[in-house]
View (cartoon, rainbow, N blue to C red):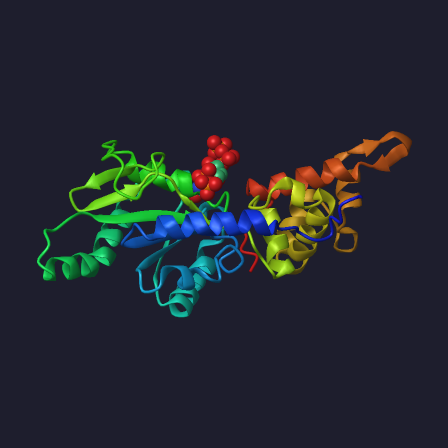
Length: 280
Ligand code: G4P
């Protein structure tokens, strides 16, 4: 049977397994960094994260800020702070040399929990934190930046599977060196579609043509000038077909090569070539 590619498909078994693993990892930490793709401040955040974290402090990182409009992003920082009652920071893990400010924030956020432990008469220990987020938002890049100056693996701790290692960032902070992957589950198809644009969805789950069509529709509405400039289109001819013709992506019979055009449009967007956008 041919798969219906107009919808994004999730696999309940995979999701349940990923959620279990995430819960197990979360039970080991004092605070969490949730990485969100700054181009999708709502669609790439996990609705149920507070359910998973309970009272645990969370730092929200709007990563890939280099691919967004910085002024528009400032508004989103305030919106997310208010909505989540959490600290929100902006990052660019690809270009920034260091992310020390994040380390300081994590120490600060974890301190009340460490104080609680000490009140019970226990010795002070480093706070333990981890990075979570949807696929491709930049979790590993952030972990690499945070651990760049410290490669001291502290070894497995009780309850931690052997693959998971803690890296001592400084005497006050340890970071789990593997990210927590937030399983891809979006009941909201509109948000799911946007996640395909930023490559957070497995390629098997959607059609390039449908994703590219949706992308240019949103760009035509929100950022028409950049879209038209980049592909040299007029108002009336924003379509994959016309992009194909402008670029001379033609197949036999003189027809537009829609598959190739779709792949290129998605790639141009992902690389920030069309412009710097926020799509929520
Ligand atoms: P993940 O662990 O959440 O799955 O994401 P990962 O760090 O692997 O990053 C996914 C892709 O996003 C990588 O690109 C990475 O370089 C890029 N990336 C991460 N953070 C940023 C950022 O702040 N800005 C930009 N522009 N890109 C970022 P890739 O193409 O898969 O690899 P590479 O070509 O960069 O090596």
